[in-house]
Length: 445
Ligand code: ASP
Image (tube, rainbow, N blue to C red; front, side, top):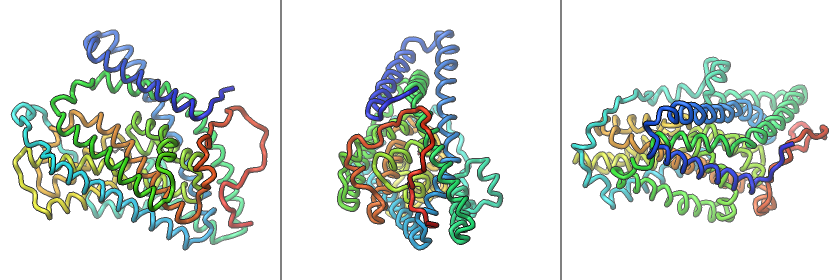
């Protein structure tokens, strides 16, 4: 029997994360050319463990989002409310991403990021510009021509579109479709249990991911890129601790401190996996069980946010734009900056939350405003580390918007939110089946 409770689990994950970071950095400094360590430990043990852990997380995403979303839509019961929740969360996601990139441009311009950069030295790195999808295709791609292919490819926006349409039709049919809604509720409960089981090995997965990343990257890379790296981190911190927390306090009317305490494990997951998508199961679990958001809201807003909302990524793009423009001595006009804001928002809608996608989006932004795309080579070196940090901010933004929307819809239990121990991990042994507690209001009863 594996049992644990979440506060202890979070501490355990943090300890293993730091251990991975330290061991990885030590290997990078002292054993980067020791064949045995590189072959068997870094590319063997760490790589295999880390990849298995990421696969385990990704394995959960599609079934969890599907069953949870069917429960959510059927739980909302009212198509008008669904439209309202959808519109509110969409607008809030746009607002937070746009304010993130605007803040990034503002701070980077004031600091003058990149003005003193040694272009000759840095220009030795080459960057092959990836092709970004055209904007029209982003919209066409929302609708799957084949839902089975969408499921097979894990295309989240298409899966969300199809599942919502399917669930609305379940609602429209009424009583005769009730077994489908009931079945989805049971399957959702099972998937939540699978999440809990997978989480029990999280500390070791996080350790392996951190050790592998830092033994390859090391901490030393940061030094030559300090001005860019430092400004991105500064704005990430400002956005996460000021903009988002002020929104939460004044719009959501909840305690930011309690929120942050409960989001710690989610942020660690996002940090070590660099993927908002792979973190969906953990975010969903925390938002429902620890923050007390009703499944009917969380099941929709969390996966939606993980796909379309990327505050941290937008921040990196804002700073990178100012940095590269300064390095190349290019003056950007106000219209240029406005385009950056618009493009960063649109790019985050059209791309999934997976590692490194921010760089592809950056190529899209640069193309649009006429900055040299090969300039991306200058920021590539530190992108792996920044990806980890911005992903943690991305998932924080998703949970903030989910909480605010849930507060507005009155679908959050403030008792659970304010209970510091809410969401303690259940004992992972099989209990006799008991009647399902309606995690959502059943529209059929
Ligand atoms: N890794 C980020 C995420 O999954 C996206 C990016 O910035 O590259 O949210």
